[in-house]
Image (cartoon, rainbow, N blue to C red; front, side):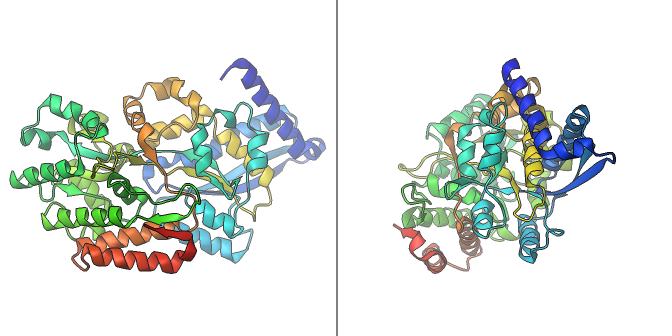
Amino acid sequence: MGARKWTARILTIALAVVMLFGAAMAAYAQEVIKLRAWTVGPDTPAFYRAENLKLAAERLNKYLEAAGANVRVEVEADFWTDTWDSYRRRAILAFESGDPNAIPDIINSSHLDIATWASAGWIVPMDEYIERYWDGTFEDFFPHLWESVTYDGKRYGVPQDIEVRMVFYRKDHLKAIGWSDADIADLPRRVRDGEFTLQDLVEVGKKMRDAGLVEYPILHRPTAGPDFFQLIVAFGGEYVDPATGKLVLDRQAVLETLNFFRTLTQERLTPNGMTSWAWPTVHRSVVVDGTAGVQLTGGMWFWAEWQRDLGVTEDYLWDKFVFTLIPKGADNGRPNQLGQPQAYMITSASRHKDLAALLIAIASDVDLNTNHALQGAKLAIRRSQTAFPDFAASTYLASASTLVPDQIFLPAHPASGFYNTALYEAIGAVEAGMLRPEQALQELERRLRSQLGDDLIVK
C-alpha cells in the first residue's frame, strides 16, 4: 500500500475514532465496550477468522490510546469447529430469540447464508460502512468478491476469505499404474485443456482398483456441500439463470451427474455408503493409509488441515499429491472449480454496529488476512496481499491461485442451501442403490418445484 493511501487510511480510522468515541474522550473513568463475534471453520486451521477480530481490537485500542480516548474495546470471539449444520442451527436459534444478549454483534459465515439472513432481517446492509472505509482498505479487495456478498442490490457482508476446490491425486498410485513424473506434472494442464476428462478419471480409478493399490480409488466429501455443482458444470449444465437470478434445474446435466456417481459405486470405485463416512476417515484414507487414490471434491484448505490434524509435513504432501480442476465430463462441459467465500456480517441486534464495522475493516488488514491465508491455506482477498512477502513466498498458495480463472460460485439465493442439500441427498440415494438416476432426478425436480415454485427454471 502506498504512503499516500496509508496516510488516508490512518486519517479515516482517526476520524472514525473521534466520531465513535468523541464524548468519551473527556470522561474520567475508562469505559470498556465489549463486542461478541461468532466465527466458523469448521476446518480447524481457519482459527484466524476469530483471532483477527481480537487482533483488530488490540490495534484499535492503540489508536484509542493515542487519540486520548478513555474507552477501550474488548472482543469475545468464538470459533466453531463442529459441522456447518450445527453452526447454522445455533445462529438461527439465537436470531429467532430476538435477544440482543444471545445474538453476537459480528457473525462470520458462508456467503450463501446472506440471502436467507438478510431476508429475515437478521443482518444489516453494510454499504455505508464499506464506503466509509473504502479508501485504503476495501478498494483493494478483488472486485468479484463483492458480488458474492451482494443480495437484492445491497452488500450485506465483507468478504473474509476465498478458496478453491480441486481434485487431489496420489502420485505414488499414479506411478504404480504406469504414469511417469512428466505425465503427472502435465496433468493439471491436460485437465484445464479438456484433454483429461471425468471418463479418464474413472479409468484411472479402475486401474488402481485392478492393481490392488486401494480399497476404494475415488472418494468424495461425505457431507453436503456446493462441490457437487462442479459436476453439473463439468457436464455442460448450469444452476442459475444470470438474467433473472432464478435457480435452474438442468435435467440432462444433472442426470449425467447422477449417472456418474452411479458408475463410481457400481464399479466399486467409491463406497455405496460414501455419504455416511466420517470426515476423519476420508482424510486418513487419502493421506495417511493410501487406501484411496483420488479425493474428488477436495478443498485447498485440506493442505493445512492435513498438516495440522494428521501430523504430516508439507514436503510429504508435495511428494504425494498433485491437484487439478474438476475435469470436464461432456463436450459441452468445462473444467472448473467452485469457490465459496466467507464473510463478516453485522447483526441487526448489535448495539454497536459502527464499532463492529470499524473492527471488521481493521481485521481485513493485509498482514492479518495473510496470517489466515497461510495458516488456513486460503487465497488472498486483497490485491496487495499477493505481493505481501509472506504470502508471495508460499509455493502452495501460488499454485492454487492458478485455478482461480476457472472459478464458479453458487448464487446468493435464499434457496441455494436447499438446492445444495437436495442434490447431495439425490447423489446419496443413487450411490446407495435406493434410487435409479432417473428416479432421483424426478424426486429432485419434485422437491425443487415444491420449494421454489416460479423461482425455478427447469430445462
